[in-house]
Amino acid sequence: MTEKPAIAGGTPVRDTKIFYTRHCLDEADCQAVMDVLKGRDITCGPKIGELEQRLCEITGAKYAVAVSNGTAALHIACLAAGIGEGDEVITTPITFAASANCALYCGGKPVFADINEKTYNIDPESVRARVTPRTKAVVAVDYTGQSAQLDELLAICREHQLLLITDGAHSIGTRYKGQPTGSIADMTTFSFHPAKTVTAGEGGAVTTNDRALYEKLVLFRTHGITKDPERMLKEIDGPWYYEQQELGFNYRMTDIQAGLLLSQLDKLEIFRARRKEIVARYDEAFRKIPQVIVQEEIPESDTTRHLYILRINPERLTIDRKQFFEALGAENICCNVHYIPVYYFPWYQRLGYEKGLCPKAEKLYEEILSLPLYYSMSDRDVEDVITAVERIAAYYVK
Image (tube, rainbow, N blue to C red; front, side, top):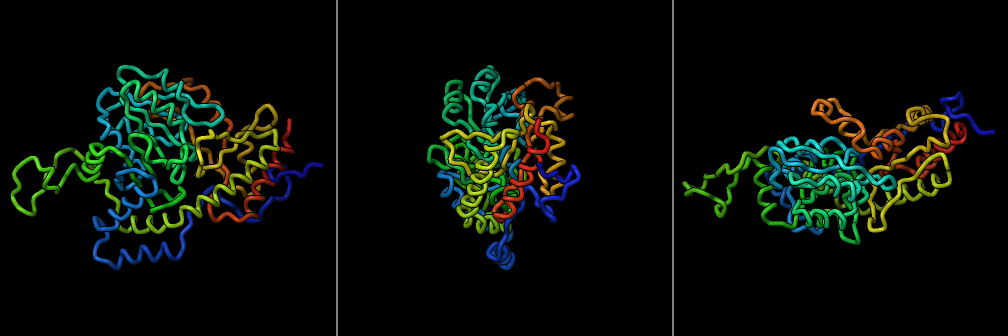
């Protein structure tokens, strides 16, 4: 007889909760922060340049600009791309709202393309179908950490003279055809929120190989102000002189954050390896359960997974996603859902967006949840998650 899941009156798989994500900080991270605090500069200091150089080394990009968070990174990327009033930016609805909001910040209009129903990333053919004379850029999200189909997207962008911005908030450490994410699109943005593979507490960055874009990014990060004599438009009054040349923002990262992130980046490869181990074990187990569906990956992407998405199979279950989510919670497996389609939100509804724009994305939302995935998960933690899914799937089989 199939053991009852806790929600049906059984005993929970675990006595304590396991959460869907957890940052991992060690003594080296703490020491890195203390070293900055004890030094001369806690912001606008040398750690920012050191971090930007490290990000270039990791991503293979020529230039990196560190900023206060991933949303700031997307905003200045759109500003550098020249997004303005009435310009259209194509993106996916299966993402955090910032991937679309960044167009609105600049006076542009987000246009939502549908997803590939197997990989859950933006579908290049859906992007192509949404290009209009007003389209200026594409923001492709490396959803869960898997690289978007960059060759196809770049071909579309080059054909229509568009800029490709990759939202790599999930994909630090991922490689596309052996090349690190961050060096392929015109610009790539990153987030270093605590839920991500490496963290600065908050923080973000933009990478690019284009010198002109880089110079714009640096301006927009710091109020539109430059102190570089070679960039001055007027005669220099003295060594104190600086110029505001654009309407920029205070999107600077502190040296405290940069110090922490530099220490975290020292561990990127071990974080990457452990996440891949956990994903491989999950995939092995869940592919044997017909009541759930495993996210597929394109062969070009060597993925460092930020999220593990499990999709329920409604044709094989007597419960829906919400009930499956609650059943896992009763087993002390705390999950999340990534993401609500962006245009479902009241703000977007007020702008005139309606349900039905992206049918595959909308169906996906009804069937997914995010399972626990982070570096410090023990093998026992992983097996407990698997046992809980197996128990629920077997008990509520149709």
